[in-house]
Every structure is written in structure tokens, then in C-alpha cells.
Length: 367
Image (tube, rainbow, N blue to C red; front, side):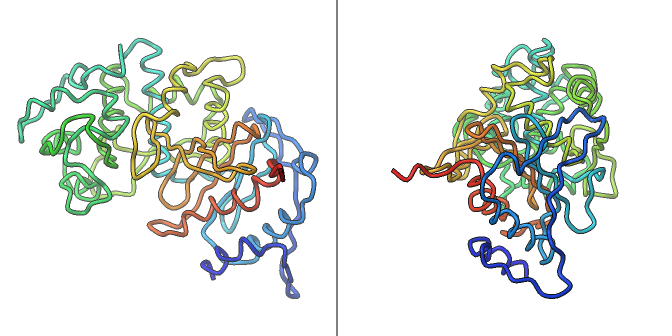
């Protein structure tokens, strides 16, 4: 059934509903004390036939999308939840947490806790040093290398034979020490391989540089100024204590959308500069190539159909369908959460954006 729904995105205009099926009704997202202004999406678009056909299918068929939110011109305009999921429920962001960690590194530099993204990591990791596979190249690993996943360590989450593959590391008692003890397989900066443990090290750099746990640092310098309160740090690994730097974020979809609007606004929320515009630019522009895609500081650049052309847009991604997508051309932020873990179905939101939601705001020129 889910696969059929994925295929049917391109056929949404043909909608026939059986007796007893639900009929989608759009509602303006409710205002709340969380800082979001809201607006009527239907006042922003023309023909809504495709929109209503799509959501009629979403509320009547089986799928693994948990929420879809759109922020238009800085105001929340669409907020839909499916199944048991709801507005106040925190969702596991999985690797989308990495993109938020990138913002925390930028804040740490802005605040003077870290001098430069090009500093070697051992300038700040005072209590840690390699004990195995001693290699002088490890002293050359910088914060930049952590953020671009180009440390040179044998750490590749997409290769089960890699000694630093995340599922292998999760079985270790000390994730940080184990990662630093991995063998070097290339020079730092040589090429990028997807390495979650490098991002854990980046969080620990912020923690040791600031003298605060990463959750306390995030609360003080990112979440509190933005009115983000319903947050939890956790991990699916059980049976052992996990240091704060190793945990990932659980946030509501509305708060996740705030992170997207912060980046869209070049680091500002309200009247406050939370993270410098310079850092936002560096974090979201191409720094390396990862899996054939442009990659910044833990933010992806992914092609979308924007009018007549494919354009690369800034995206935070997480296993299962956790996405934060930015479309400056339409002044639009999109949020998806989902449960299609370790499945190609977690790419469904890209089809939704390209075929249903983006056409509401960006039309081909028909030259």
C-alpha cells in the first residue's frame, strides 16, 4: 500500500473516494505562545485541486509520513499530522540533528569559545588523545574536517566493513576514545565519507571549549532565545550511559521549522542574531562532495525542480524521513517527519515537494 502511494503522487488529480473515507479540510495553523505567526495558505496559491487531492490520499491511505509543515514568508501556513502524531509530540530527528550541531559550532565560534573552524580538534579536546593506531595525521584533523566528514579516519556509516561504522561504535563503551583510536585510511581533507562519530566529536569540541554539556549549550545559546522549550536529547541505543555529545535531538515539528526559518533569515530570529550570517553562508554552501552531492558544514545541497530548472537547495536530512528544506526563491521552509527508517520510502517527501507543494508557489515560465 505504501509503495502504491509513492507511485501515485503523479496521478493525484484522479481522486475517487469510497463511502466512509475521510475528506481533507484545510485549517489555518493555530496560533500559540511558541512565537509562530500563522497565515492562510489558500490565500497564497491559485489552483488548489492538486493540494486537496494529495491530502485526501494522505489521510486515507497507509504511509510513513508523520507530519508536513510549510512556512511561507516567515509565517506558518500549513501544519498537518498523520496517524497518532500531533503538534506537541517530540520526534526523533535522527541525523537532522547534525545540521543543528553545525549551528552550535558556529555559535561557539561567534561567542569566542572556539577561535577558528580550522583549529585542530586537540586544541580543545584536552582530556582526549589517541591511544591506538598512532598516526601524526591525527594531529592535523581540524574542526572543519569533522563538519565536512573528511577526517581521514576509517569511519564510514555506509560501509559495514568500516571499523568506525556507527552500529559498530554503538557497541563500544567509550565512543569518543574508540573513534580517536580508529586507523587513518587517508589524509585529512582528502575526501568525505559519511561519519556520524565525527559529528559526535564536533559536539564534544563545543562542550569542552565552552565548559558546558552540548545540551546545556544549545539551551542557553540556541533554544531559549528562540522560545524552543519542548526538547529532549536521547538515543535509540540502550543498556549503557551515553554522554550528552552522543545524543540526538527530539523536537516538535513546529520547533524544527524554527531552525529552518533561522537559517532562511541568515541566522536571525526576531530581532536577535542567534548565529552569524557568515557562519550560515559557510555552513550551507559547498565545502565538499559527499555521495555525489554538494555538502556544507553538515548541511546538504539537493536538487529540486524549481520552475523550469533543477536548483540546489539547502536541506537537513535524517533517516526515516526527517527533512528540513529551504527554498529562498519562494521564501518557503518545509518540514517533514516520518517513520520510514532504513527504507527508500523515506525519499517520499522529495516527490511531494517536486510534484505537489513547490508547484503551488513556483510555476514554469512556459517560454
